[in-house]
Amino acid sequence: MLDLDLVKTAASRIKGIVVNTSFAYAPLLSDISEANIYVKKENLQITGAFKLRGAFNKVASLDSKIREKGIIAASAGNHAQGVAFSAKHFNIHAVIVMPETTPITKINGVSSYGAEVVLAGSNYDEAYAYAKTYAQEKKLAFIHPFEDEEVIAGQGTTALEMLSDQPDLDVIIVPMGGGGLISGVAIAAKAINPNIKIIGVSASGAPALRQSFEQKKAVHSTSVRTIADGIAVRDTSTITLDYMLSNVDEVVGVDDEEIANAILFLLEKQKLVVEGAGSVGVAALLHHKIEGLKGKKVGIVLSGGNIDVTMLSVIIEKGLLKSGRKLKLTVTLVDKPGSLMKLTQLLQGLYANIVHISYDRTSTSLDYGDANVTIDLETKGEFHQEEIRAVLLDNGYLSKKIK
Image (cartoon, rainbow, N blue to C red; front, side, top):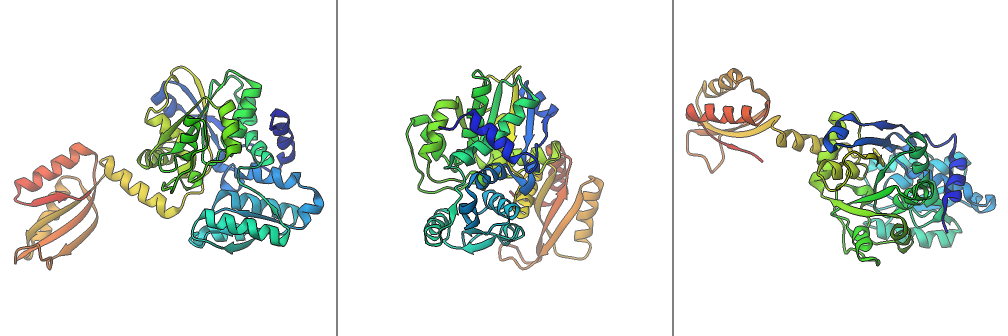
């Protein structure tokens, strides 16, 4: 059984390779929650996520003869990079099986460490099945992302570092997907301080592990859908579930809207780029999913920062719209010289900055002689937006807000 000694052994293996990331006080989160909040910045880890800890520990623990035959893993993200990095360090061959739908940026990220990338299947589960068969055929050591004690022990080193920096933590909040990170953290933390509370946070679109914990038996999902792709695990591991039932105190869920809010908060207020999976703990805090934190000393694991740039841009755009800092309007006006100039002069007088504008006179919904102007504006909040709409209406413009 996995215990503190195995986690300490993992810590000695990864020392000097894996970064002891900053565990820093977060004043704004502390004010919001009325607690003392510290964030463990695994988004700044080598390869951009905590997964390197478990992957490196597992590869380092292998018998040299087994290791020299090569290793294989199935992953579309952080585990893949952790295994590839570890293989490069030990100068061994690594095969990473990734779904055929994997973005080219992730494929290139893995390839940059010298690993061989094999694309197979339309999703992780199909890629995993292919990788298991390939491993048997080629006699390669399979590195599982969470169903492995050496991997879990490596992830548990996160807790050792947190408690070394802040020994009197009352609570640790941990993202959970497959359960490797929360199992390792909980085992290590509880062994050091049995009174510490461990809380897991899952994405509502990938609820299997949370439901399994609540029902105290393995429950699987038919599908998963969440922007937190790092914890989008469909099936529950009985191995990690058993560790959780023995060591974890509570689990909660957050939806994609709440996760997106947390990503934007961390970017804007904490100056940290954190992926969806890494943001769920902060999402739970911001949206008051966890009770009893007032006055407590709380550590939150920001598990990774490998967010797709396109997804990040969508989150930023939607966040600006929701917070009243951006307004999209469609205005109907008479299609004649000077009409557009009059509209823009009105907006100028209201100190609304136009960042994008399009002009349509051919829509079948328009009367002859009219045109629709779609405008993106930078605004100063809801009150400013209401003022803009009121002035447009007073000047005879029909407008509608685009959501």
